[in-house]
Length: 93
Image (spheres, rainbow, N blue to C red):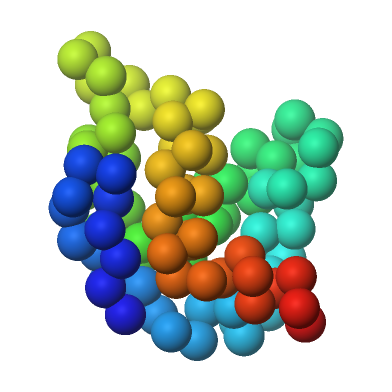
């Protein structure tokens, strides 16, 4: 399925993402509340969600100096996963 970033860029996200155990494990870590575990989870979620488009995603949210702030990654992931209803599906599983 196609989801749009907050800036309007389109990314193809697998419709079966919420059924992928690797994604569920990474997503749970990302939402754990433990800062270190959350960052590890976010790294894995970004890789699983964006695949070959990971660099394009990170460039889009990067600051002028080229860094991709962790808080921006979390915010944009939430925005995009909400579109894909991944969060809703996982909560109902």
